[in-house]
Image (tube, rainbow, N blue to C red; front, side, top):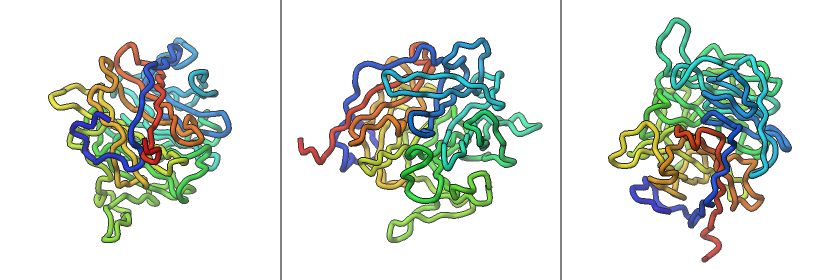
Length: 337
């Protein structure tokens, strides 16, 4: 596990994780971040930032969309046009997708780096939704400003099958800037049929004496679900149904490191989206010499027994500035080996 400085104790379910040596890099999937959601059957939808996507078109997009079919290492991507395509921007100078979710036939999108009209402040996130698989979008008339700067939806099965309840859950690093590290991760939820309505959102506000979650309609009451003194950045949470565990992935900043992006990776598990968290993997050098970020385990690419998964990630360095996958095999405590 290489858990030096890990913020939480070892997992009671996962004894260890083996990372297969080869990284599957889609050289025709140029861009970064790649939030992804399982639509149905063999179809997933993803989004990319600052790239030309899978089809190598001439237009460089700050926000573009692709469809993914197949399973690694034989998956394939195909771009599609959307009225949310954003040609301008690099880094914070253009909106980027931070989260996608398919639920009950609606595709939801959170973007970061959103600048309200008439403002120079890019440190905001905004929601959009589509009823035609991402071709046309409607934008919410509200946004998050001081926190939830890089929101990601908690992922379940295709079209949200197998979800724990009738809420949609949104997790984010606890600050308003995707280019900084926050020690905390925060969590919100909304009824699955009212995701566009800001007034329906509740925020995790700690736990009661029995350990049950408390929820508040006031965002000021939010409390972290996860804390790492070495920071969190561009996080993701996905549900491994076979193991009955939520898997949280996040970058962190190793001691002495001052980079915006690092080769570090933390993988944590919990019985609920709010914890309590334990450590599966915590490495300062996971992708060295490359600096990588926005790691996630797509639920479609988890084996039936939950032991084999594929980690999707990207990075700032040329070798990994693409749609990258790395196979992971879990050793379970129940194996007794």
